[in-house]
Amino acid sequence: MENNATTIEMLFEKAEDYTRTTVELVTLNAVDKTADVLSSLLSRLTVSIVFVMFAFLANIGLSLWIGELLDKVYYGFFIVSSAYFLISIMLYIYKDQWLKMPISNFIIVKMLKKS
Image (cartoon, rainbow, N blue to C red; front, side, top):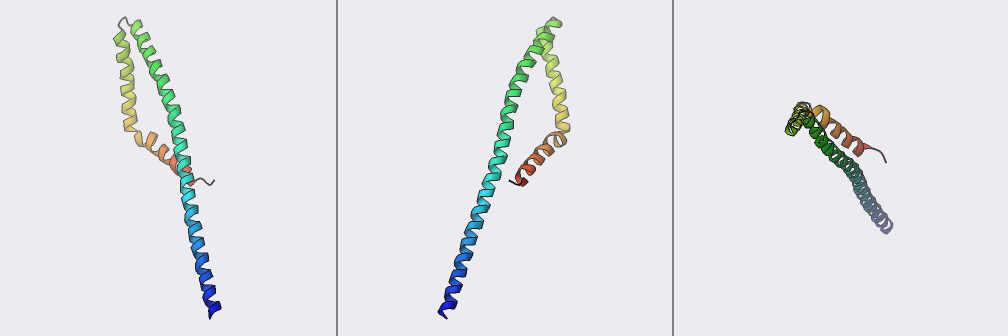
């Protein structure tokens, strides 16, 4: 009888160890995936910020140049801002196709990627 009780205790201990190990593995996998997604998004965000700064300065230069060609500086700013207004309308209309779906697909691919 004592041998049978010892076997059952060993079985419970092994089951407990297995459960602890499985929970730890799931936790580590979740941390790995989260870190991968966040690092990818932050690196893309950094590149985007640098590009936006470049585009901002280039647009000021373009506005000044167009304004100089039209003999009124503010005309250049109106023309460039009108172009951005048209772009923003297009982005609003196609935001699901051009923005939401690619970002969602990127996150899903990163989360489901095998290490």
